[in-house]
Image 1 (tube, helix red, strand yellow):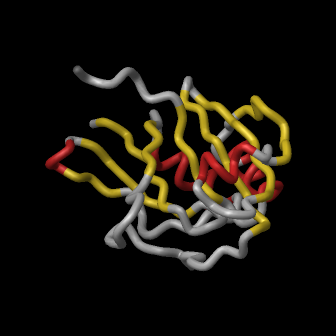
Image 2 (cartoon, rainbow, N blue to C red):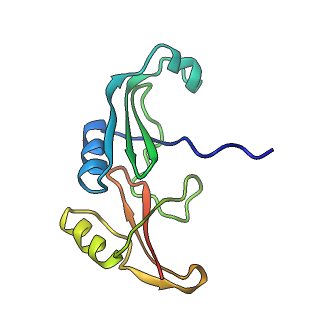
Length: 144
């Protein structure tokens, strides 16, 4: 049996306010659930003793993003601008109608790209990769 449709994507962030601002002002996501403190259940749910912090949920085009910012225990593995070749989550992709316009718009907002948009024949699309404020890799794709 195949699982149901994806419900949400979760990402840990280092500064929840900064991430909300980025995902709202750059990507255009809507804040669905305001910042809230993690409940006492999160320690058991996450399997992390002493887990505390806050979270928020945003949505864009039917995709929900759950962002958690843990203040305890201390983060042990902050990835400073990890690349798409590193083990772990590779990237999240956003489809756009005009990649060149979005590329310029995002650059004007201070978004760091790994390179300019280019055609990738194997997927018949033009793509460009960029970083969110915590170094998570995102992709823009414009189908050709």
